Image (cartoon, rainbow, N blue to C red; front, side):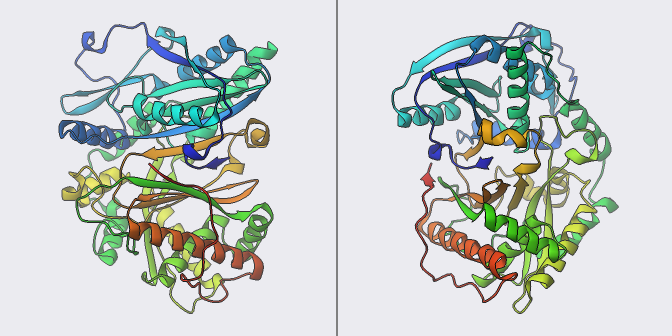
Length: 485
């Protein structure tokens, strides 16, 4: 299961059907003005930015999407039943968000008050037309301030169908996408076979948000639990760790983005890379992160890597099969100075990660609000920020059937002022998806960085270490997959 631009996805042509979610409940305006459930810190900040952008006539937009395949003739009513059951199962997907008395209310619609209506959209005889339709559909149908906050449909063909779901980030995260695939297909196959669907418990994300707010809403800047953040800020000099290479951006300006993806290691190379990391006492993601730090330093960055890393919060309780935004963004730092060998860098990454995990409880949004209030009031991060994300898709529920279901994940954002990179490991190898500003400097910088990183992780796999310093001036082999959006 890979993450790459939707524009790179080869969806075969066919008849497009969508299922529109409809509420039979009373309109939100007829309900009590007393908040029932409250949104999480992540959701509140996301919604606030959308409100401010709309008020300034400068709307921001983004979505997270997943597609997967169903072989054979699709039973449309059964798929609709599976999709409706999926929405009913996850309370966050049934929520309407409203600003009440300064707080963001999260009002769930009762499962029995939801219905799906099928609508034939169009029939396409060209794959490019299908792809263009989906790209525009997701952009136009996902709106943080409007319910529903996702869209569902399928491209039907006699021999197979491609199912798609696209979500606003306010109701899900990247780790929710494998859950979507597993649950919808498990339910569909059970309905088709006339047997009960066996799904694990999925506690509500709203319960998670309520617990988080109860624990951290009342803290102030002097709380001792912010010590890790304060220590990082003291060494970093500011709240946000800057991306250390030139992207050619101007202050306070947002840019169109380049969305690109490519493979760094094939399946065999990724297996060897993992073995080398384990022999050094590190996990594979640490090997990738350490390689990123070395490449940034070789390109002119500092010897000490400082960056943000999203960390899943699902493991603390029984949230592993719940849909929601279970992500805490944390600062991490380690030594990538010249002269250190692979084992030494891995030891530093391991120590830095261990220190970070020991302080993961404080939500990023609360730390941001309390320790950088001026930046918190803005609609975007203040400058290009160093950001690293890694997911091993082989460990997701349902991964044993990914070769059959052929799921893919896609992210999109309208504009940005920096760069973000996501790394995925699957049975085909190690892959990278980056969104960054569309400037000449950023294209050069990110192209060189991506090639340097590819050669670095390949060197680790082939020689057991970093080997000779990576030269950024080496010719880059052509790679498809750069998409300007």
